[in-house]
Image (cartoon, rainbow, N blue to C red; front, side, top):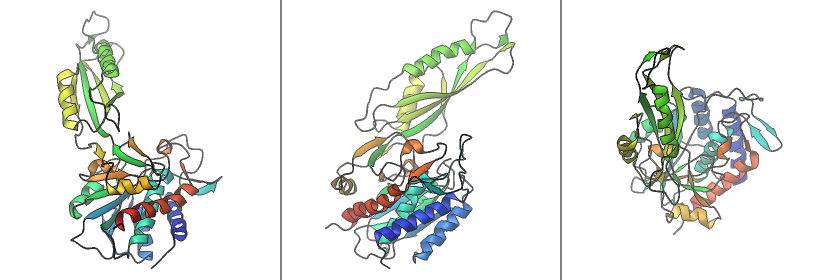
Length: 358
C-alpha cells in the first residue's frame, strides 16, 4: 500500500483529533489504545498489545538486522484548573489544534505512526522498525514502556517522540527525586529551643540553593537541583521534630544517578533518600548516522532538560517531535496544524536518509 505524505499527514491529524476526544490519563488509556490499534489495522499493520501498550514490527522484519524503535506515549496528565476551553474537544482556531495531549505528545505520536505506516511494507530497510505507542509515561507507571521493553527484541537505536520543534535533542537530563529530612528538637512553642527544625532548615535550603556540581556538560549544561516541596508542623504551639523536603535533581551526562547520590550523601547538610535511581540521562552520538541525516536536512542539535521515556532505554536514543515543550501541561494546550503536517514529511526524510542510504 503506497500512501503519499500529504494523505498520511491528514490521517495523522485525524487520529490526533480522535485521541484528544478520549480521556486517557495515566493508567486509564484503554480507549486510546484501542483507537490506535484500529487506526494501524486500517493500513494493514499487524499489531500487538501488552496492557495499554500497542506495538508493531515492520512487515518484512528480519531478525538478522538491527532494530530501530519509534516510540511515543498516548497518556496525558489531568487538565489543570486554568483551562478555558474543553480539554477533550479537539478544534482548530487560527491554525492551532486545541486539546489535552495535543502537544504532549499526541502530535509526535500520530506523526510517528504515520511514518511507520509509510515504511511498513518496504523490503530494503537497513534496520527493522518497531513502533510502540505506550502508556503510563506521565507517571512512570509499571505498565509503561518499562514493561514492554523486556518482551521486545534488543533495540539498537531509538527515536522518542516528544515536542522538540523537530530539532534534534541528542541528550536528555536524568532525574533523581530526593526526600530530605532536617532534624530538630520538638518542644512547646512557649519555651526556649535552640534546635528548632524549621530554623535549621533555613541553612539547609540556602545550601541547596547555592550548591554547584563540578562537571558541566557541553550539551546539557550543569546539574540542576531545585527544592520543590517543604512540609513541617501540625499545630501552632508545637515546634516540630523535623522538616521534610523534596529536591528535584536534573542530572547531566557527566554523572550517573548513583554518583550524584554518593556526592550528596557526603556533602548535603541533611539526611537524603532517593525515590529512584533508575531515570538516567540519555544521549546519542552527534556523529551517529541518524543524527547526521537530520543535520543534513537543516535540523539543529541541543540538550533537553525534560524527562521522557528515553530514561527507560539502554540504547542510544534521539528525542524528536513536533510541538514546543513549554506548551506541555499548560492550560488550553495546543499544537499548530502545520507542525504535524511538516513533522510527517521530516520524519520520513530523516528516516529515509538513515534507513535507505547505501
